[in-house]
Image (cartoon, rainbow, N blue to C red; front, top):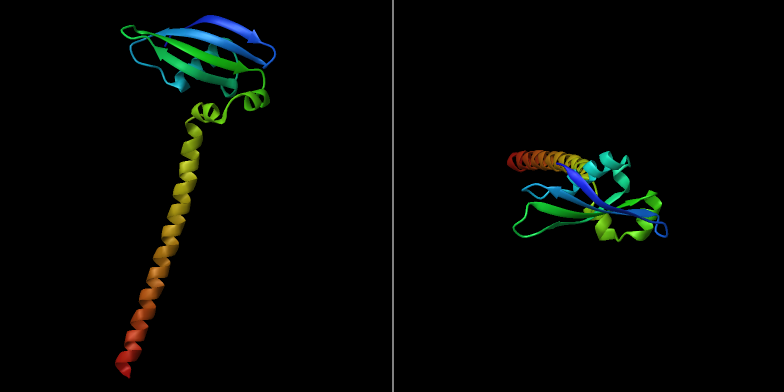
Length: 133
């Protein structure tokens, strides 16, 4: 993906750079691809980049990208809305959360299985006692 930066304006008040870029390809790039490419071109951390919009003009292969690069993560958290921060989160973090959830589910299933086995043993013992009486 070849990303061409059209405009790079510094906003001193909000502590960020406002970027407008274009990419010429048939498919719409993901936010992750755009973030990685911008970070490489501008030598900044991916954590400080927020991709606001990837616009596609009808009938054209050119996509227009609007992004903001913050000086600090603290500024980004103060200025950006929560939904935009969530939208730009890395996909790796949810995978780690999913693993943790899966581990908890597995533990719960094991505990439930043990409880079922213990209950069935108790039931068998009660039936033996009833049969003896």
